[in-house]
Length: 400
Length: 152
Image 1 (cartoon, rainbow over the protein chains, first blue to last red):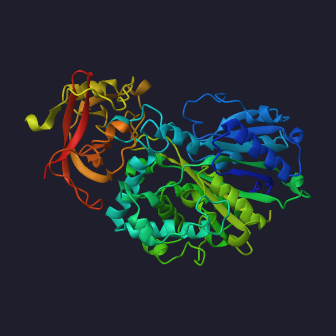
Image 2 (cartoon, rainbow over the protein chains, first blue to last red; image 1 turned 45 degrees about the vertical axis):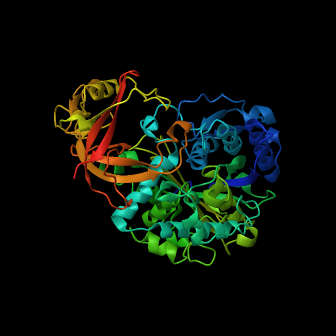
C-alpha cells in the first residue's frame, strides 16, 4: 500500500519544555514560557507564529476556552486564531490533527501547539483540606462520585482487575512496567524520578491505593508545560533543528463498539487508530523504533502492547516480565520514564520524548537510529462504564 | 427482592459529594427512592441500557421516545472490582477499605457501586459472584443510593 498524500508533508520544527514544580508561577506564565522556548528552538520569533492551539484536558468538558488568559496574548504572537483542543490525556494528537487543516489551506504557516498544567502545585493546596490527589480536576457530577469513585484510579483500577480476572495477569507483572519505566527515567535528568531507581519489591511494598493498584502503578501529578511548532515540510527545511515529520495519525473510540461488547476493561480502542496511522505512513509495527504509550496507569501500557500486537492478547504480563520494554529490551517503551516516572503532561510527555528521540537529542537514553517513533493518547469523560473512550496514535519520523 | 436486608436507612448528615441528578437520570433516582432499580429499555426490541442512550439496534423516534425507564431485576454479577485503601476525600476516611465494583446486570448494562454486607470478595481476580441491589435511603437528604451485596 502506498503512503497517503499527507504523510511527511508536515513537520515539527521546535520543542519547548518547562518541567518540575512551578508553585511560584501561574499556569499562564508556564504556558507562555513553554511556547517561548519552542519558538526559540525553531529559530523563529513570536511574530512568525500565525496560529495558536491550547491543549486542555477539559477541552470537551464544558469549560470556557478563555477561563484563563491565552498564552498567545501573554507572549504576543501574531496569530490569526487561538482555540482549545483536548479530551483528557488526548491532547497533542488532537492538536496536530486540527492544526493540519489550517496549514493545508495556507491559513497559517507556523502553528504553536501548547499544553500546561499546575496540577502538582494545586494538589499541595487541596491536601490542606484533607483531599488527596488531583482534587481540583475531578468535576462534580459524574456517576460514581457520591459512591466513592473519586479519582481516575477509582475506576481505572477495574481495567487491571478485569485483565487479571480474564487473563491471569498479576500485580508483579504490572509492576514490571513501573520498574522498566523507572529504569528509563534514571537515564533522563529531566524526569521527576531521575536518580531514584526501584525494584519489583519496591513496587510490591508500595501502599495499596485502589487494589490491585499500588502507589507505583499510578502516574505522577505534575506541573509544567510543553509546546511545539508545526509547519509544512517545505518550511521545515533549513531550520536550526532537524524536522520531525508527521507520518500518520489514527483515532479510535471505545464508545463506538467496545463499550457494548464490554471489552473496554481489557482492550483499548486501538484497531482503527492503528490501521489509519500505519496505513497513511505505509509502515508496519516492526518499523517503529520506540514507543511512547499513554501510561496513566500500568495496565494501559499492558493493554496497548497487546492491542498493537507487540504480543498476543492476554500475554502482556509475561511479555513485560521478560524485560522486553526496558532499556535492554526489544521494544523501548516510554523512554523518558513516561507519566509513571518522568512527569504527567498528558500525551505531551510522550510527544516531547518522541520528538527528542527522532532528533537524536535523548542523551543517555537515545535509541540508536531512531527513524520512527509512535506516540499515543487516551482520555475522555470519567463516567463509567463509557470512561476514557478516545485513543489517538501518531507516527513521527526522521524522513518524510 | 424482599426483606429489610435490602434496605439501609441512614439519618447521618451527608458530607460526601452529592449524587449528580439531572434531566436524564432524574427518573432513575426517583425509582431508587421507590426501591426500584430502573434501566432504560427499548419498547421496540426490549434492549436495556444504562445510562440513557438511543437504542443501538434500529432507527429511533425523536429524542428516543421509543425508550422508557423500566424496572430491572436488580440482580447481576460482579464484572470487576477494586478495594479502595486511601480516602481521597475526607468524608471517606471512616469507610476505607471499601470495595467498589462494576456490576453486569442480568439485563445487560454495566453499573457501578460499592459492595455492602458481610460477604465481600477477597481477590480482585475472583469475579462472577451473584449480587443484588441494596437501597440506601437518605430521607433527610431526599435521595436513595444503590449499593450491592453478594447473594450466593
